[in-house]
Length: 389
Image 1 (tube, one colour):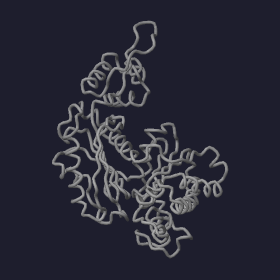
Image 2 (image 1 turned 90 degrees about the vertical axis):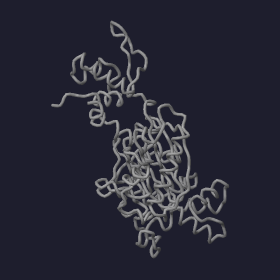
Image 3 (image 1 turned 180 degrees about the vertical axis):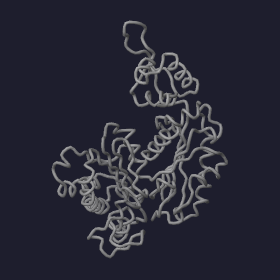
Image 4 (image 1 turned 120 degrees about the vertical axis):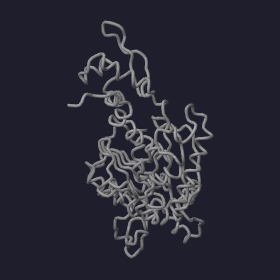
């Protein structure tokens, strides 16, 4: 059996299983001297900090320890079809600095990543955060994309919204564009959003599903704290489930009859144009919803009913405790529509304790989720042991 290293100690403290040196010693079986060495190494590396004193147990009060969330900075990018949100966060996912840059899904991926690299470099240069002079100083970079990411190759796998990005080495190209060897982690946007909501607002949820309804429709799934990506990264791709109401409608994926052709932001925008409204995309629908446009509300609620019928199968299969709606169409109209058809189609037992609501973090969910995923990767027990060995 491998002797627990400083990374294992950090994991115990991060997970809340240990708060003091004594508790670390009790769980690991390490000697008091070895625990002190492990903790001192973590304190010196800026990974741990004192968090006050615990309860007295007959002697001196033990000093409690916690992850030093301010000791490192994470850079995160949430890429969408028409723009990208960039942010710097601490290890808890708190946004410290942010910016936005327009992009186009139809652009060459190298051009887009070059633009993102420039915007991220500028964001870091403008930051007043201590110890952050260049992008090379961040602990890692997370980027979420609107498409499935193959968990084995870490490349986009036939993304309908980003056809030129299929199989493209995003992580390598972004590092090259930045000119430094910073760890980069790629993830599907709905998955990152679901993980962000889990870590940021619903930490006790055993099964959480987030449905993003924007240009397309996709779901992120977290079961017992672990993202479900699927064999090829396509878990949660519900926008391409065939539904009878969409028969004959051609989808961006090349098939006919997909849910996204009648219930996505793109589909609702098309229906609004037919009704005489100016709506070119899901973001235009969002603006009309915010203004209370009755036709936008009606069509969005109708889309919600169509999505809810598909989600009835998702609920029957996964039995989630939390079902969140996010994206451009997220609104009372969408939530009401989903609830209306979902509750009618699903077993009462499956929905009795189901919390169906709008996502709480909204546009920040992907940023918070990517920060958490980078922390999981770069501050895992193995990664920290290797770094501090």
